Image 1 (cartoon, rainbow, N blue to C red):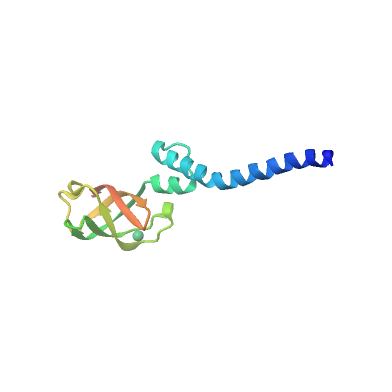
Image 2: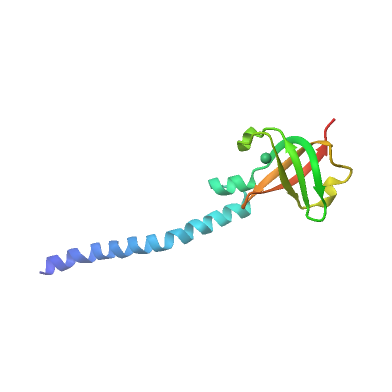
Length: 127
Ligand SMILES: [Cu+2]
């Protein structure tokens, strides 16, 4: 009876520890992921994708300054698995497009954001 009781304590403690770990672990993972976003080193797959910058070339099809959007017919971008296509990009800094207009051939850098949003961080006419 006494020996049986002694054996029960460690396994109960183990069960409690496992339950605690399972309950707490998701929060720990989220916190680590968040930290990686802030510092840019130790990246998870998700944050590495978010921080990646891709380069492409294309032709400006239209510019919507009011909506901060530009439509570009771009060539293939193997690094992100894209074929050539015509699609919209968002720009945060309108001055990036100074001197550019519809029909211009451009080279540009963009970064994916969650929700299928692609933000142009640099763009220039190519000769
Ligand atoms: Cu595209």
